[in-house]
Length: 283
Image (cartoon, rainbow, N blue to C red; front, side):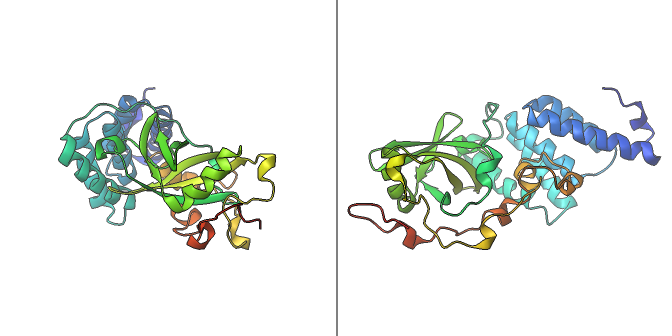
């Protein structure tokens, strides 16, 4: 797509072209076309400073294995917007990764995304867990919020796998109950909600209850009226630098607005996972 008006850089044309380029960059990133994403965001930056375009360009470089370039553009984004949490968090992630892998690594494969529905809280069917025994930073480098997670039982452990690679083990307090329910036929879907340089947090949702588990709740917790809320487009994709702020106003969209608000740090209390000797407690 040609944009001859870019050279003019004035008037309404400039605003319109920038919006078109932003939408194009988002679509390219969603399709995993990272080289094209980088080029489109560079065109946007030719029109002037833009923290969101810097974030997207950094993300594209990261996915292409250009870690040094990615960190440089996140730093520019943070300089343009000192409150930019995406840039700040990813600068730290890259610092840890680059200490092990250097400034370049292999390009990432396209990741599977978790269904948006699992990120919507539902009492008894949705729970949250931290992962332990994490994979190396090099492996976690290409894991992002929104990525799908497969849960694989093995003995008394529940492994978390993303993009075909084990990324950690579900914390014991959550795994103990789920392992029993999985053994009796329940099925679960999971996705990454947040991660830092040394921590990964996931959401787990019951998607099938075996008749043998009738009356057994996957995630016992006190019911609250705030457990079910509508959400709109935003941070889930912004975490991957794929969204523009003006898209957040679309209340008809079914994606997540702000994972930090949608998924509170502690929803399922420790008391819900006390060891049970015989049968799971019924609600």
